[in-house]
Length: 131
Image (cartoon, rainbow, N blue to C red; front, side, top):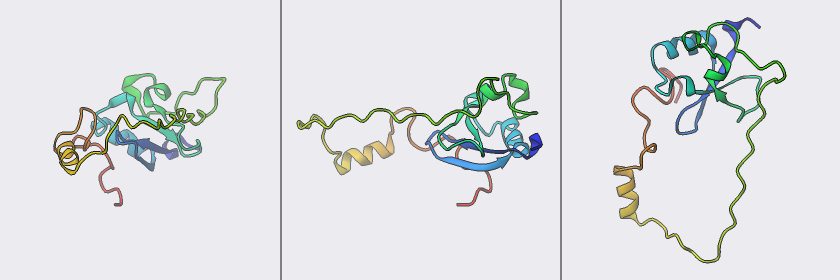
């Protein structure tokens, strides 16, 4: 398959996956600064299993040539394996946490903790992505 015809998926900071998009489209968005996270953007090729995203810098180690040419994979590895889910925490019978009241929830909506809440302008679904 030609490098330009590769199909990519990416994950935004909310954990939602978007794609597939051709290499040319990803390169265009990347060069325009659409992904503020830069080379830490989590991507995967269409033939890779879901949840096997890796930072784009792993596949394109040269910062000035991201999405140019074929991605670099270590010789001993194929597509990354899906990440294992973290172990489930057992539920304690004692409830040390409480349910959020409507007021708490409204306050959270107005002032989310750092790293949460709506993504910054220019991040999330790409321009023209179907709703």
